[in-house]
Image (cartoon, rainbow, N blue to C red; front, side, top):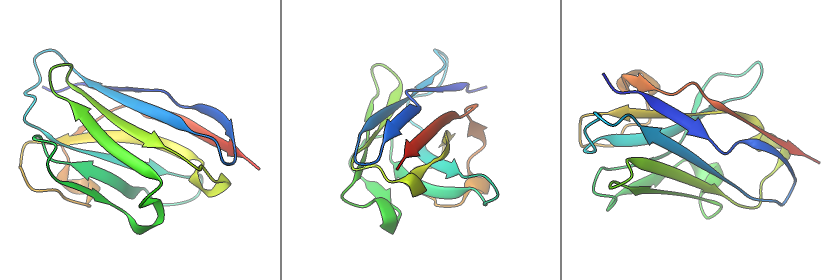
Length: 124
């Protein structure tokens, strides 16, 4: 069983930055495709970014391209989401998720492992 724990959320002013981290349990296979999703109040969960286990391939939703960067350190079993130029509409609970298949997916239903989420609030 893979356990994921996110951290790094908080309150930031518009235009600011945050870096989220997601640490996998010690027994987790580092060869996981990892994704970040977010869910704002009253809205459906949406895909944000994903990265293959090698780190060679990344994918972003259009609204965060050029602003957010996903990366990983497999030795630390940690995935990061660097978020720059944050906007109030980025306010949401951010979740990391993992799957064993090597192909990136934007569908949350294809990720069996999820963290508990970390709140990101961007004030205007």
